[in-house]
Length: 189
Image (tube, rainbow, N blue to C red; front, top):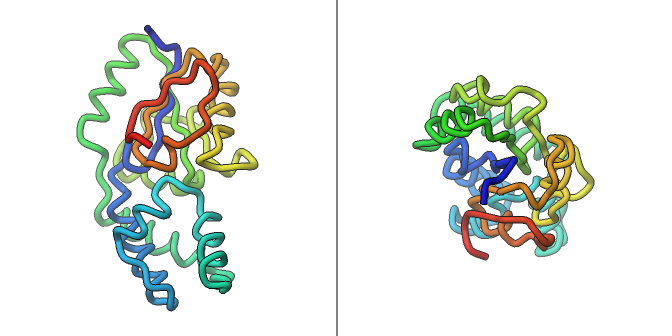
């Protein structure tokens, strides 16, 4: 089947940011008194919006993370991106092939618009994704694992959901209650 739109997740699919982000998140949570290993961070938070971090810490410990948690974390992440971030191997070839074949594509990420843009500027992927091709969990009420973000991207791109393929790498992103006609590629749930 030929799809009319390919919706890419960002972190781990377009940019190789998951190791960077999850090491920093595990370290910062541990620093704040919430011991978290890299593996814990991958299992519990990879692919999710930041509210999940706050929700799980509150649920597990009854504690609230500092008010500036997101700002401090993102500052650390953006600094690390500037030093270390690379595109996922082969992704430019895929984007070139989609463009050559006239297949529309976009990105739909749990990350903020700022995080997506910082990563794309650093890796050179910004030439492939203008503002009309970038969708964030900031744009919808519920982030992953709800399908809202992908449905929003499809609607904004003018494509019926059943004509879309989603490329996702995280277990949380793959656990959506997929609606009839959606196709998901990526990690098994």
